[in-house]
Image (cartoon, rainbow, N blue to C red; front, side, top):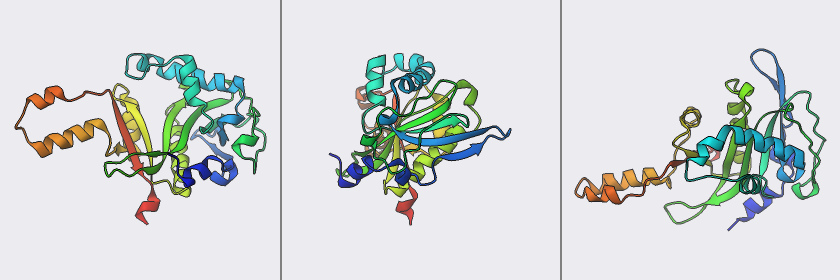
Length: 242
């Protein structure tokens, strides 16, 4: 169940969530780009199609052979949930209307972007997640980070993740969480470099810790363990360390 902080965060205007956005930056070669924050409600049907195609090109083959297959309808329903937020990395020439002070419900299909405009994006939601202690924690849950082929290896992904972490920290979320398939080694390496580790509720971590605590007394237990093809990763936000 959503807490008051989660409900408040879900209705907070983008310029309050991220006062430093829109942000202009540039690659090492000097090519400029910008990052903007928009709720799902602000994206037109055409923009949603662009973002879905980027994801589909990157993930269709990987996810079709996993425990997380999707159809276009099911993935679009997940991506563009009313509580979803998007950090968009765009070419500097892309046009996005000024939306300062407007709440998500006040932004209806105002951002029309083309495939030429978009370099990549992060999609996340403010939510609660369970813990081994039985109490829930407030998190920024990353659903997608997707880049176009020509934008990979330029540092955009790291930049988007850093901004997501700053937003989560500002809203007093305890951590950023995500789910990643084990068959996506490049993504796993990327998250590891950013400091993400197996969360306490990650099934594989839990099984390994249970095995260590039980010792090697019963080899048959290993055969009964559920094998999953994904990991749940997380990174504690700095507010907890202050």
